[in-house]
Length: 295
Image (cartoon, rainbow, N blue to C red):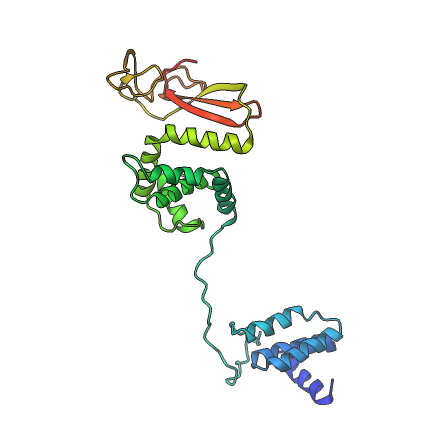
């Protein structure tokens, strides 16, 4: 380091109010930061390389130089509070502006599984034909996936889920979502659930090579914080709302009805949920019946 450079370093140290940094490597690093602030990127690079010769890592300083050369915002030198930054130092306007940041990893993994299992194409195919189909099959499929992702990553109400999809996470193909869109998608999903369950089962059974020679089945119940049960309606032998052709007069019941509660809450209306799984624990199908249904 030449005598003039050494004097410049000492002057720089005095200007920054840090004369205690007598080590040449630290002094060279300080000189590099000052040169960056003055816009002298070539001189700053030389100073950071000189600091490296004395055991000071050049990485942060060189990254700063590259940022300046790329046109990013110049850093601000830590000047003493009693000193005014010299007027010759430029203060350029930032060229990049931060807008927002959203998590992506969880939704990305779930979306990959959704597509690998063929659920996305099955839902889109069902949504593109049949009575009551959504106006936009692709949008309906994305909304339904968003609801599934919400249930897995941040369980919440449908109103809160619409806000989560719109503002708190990035999902490919999905931007602004309203709670009305969620409810419409779920209404349509309920209408095609039988065909959807069948197609998804066949797709997953083939992909995972499921063995269904032996199935395990069990039921549970879940209650609702309601004072009154649902009004009774005619039902068929499967516990579904019946048409005039298959109604069983002895099976009239509301969906949320009183029954034997496995949560010890016989005082509240409930529904009964059944699940069948393979010997490896892979779900095959689930059912929901009126709360008065017995095992």
